[in-house]
Length: 208
Image 1: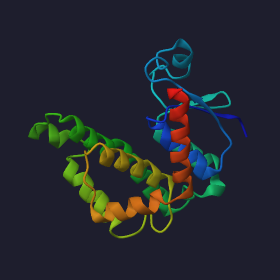
Image 2 (image 1 turned 120 degrees about the horizontal axis):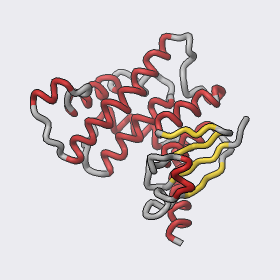
Image 3 (image 1 turned 45 degrees about the horizontal axis):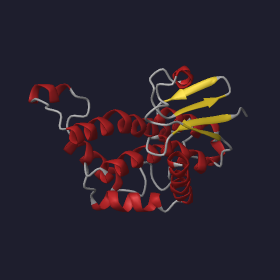
């Protein structure tokens, strides 16, 4: 296996990648990037020209976009069983919820957070429709079972719950009872708790 190097900051989506790495039991090196000065540093822009975090280097490959990194790690560590087998019907549901989270959930939450002015004609074209419809879709799924695909936590749950927790912290979202139960199960996971400890340590390093 190639060396894993994660470029991150504890106040970015990089914390979700740390969480996934901990879930997988991965060995990895962390490079902390200062948000005020490091993102436009030429050395970092050579890693990610977008000047965004996180970015993960695996051998000669560089992977950006938190959801893409998390999906990559799920496949890199199949023994952790965070993604259904490719030849099962659950793999289709897995892709559905991954892309729904990244394309629809995040867009709807950004609309709510930044108060974008969306006209009725525009809304007909938007893939996510409305925040209300997105939340109803999530809530109906979580009301049926503990996790998105059933009884087992998968990496699509990590992607979705990371978005939900961010929206709750920013007061953009008031969670339903089903969402609260879902997030309570997820936040009790040892890897999630490990990520919180690591994030605190990283923040202290950056402050110092």
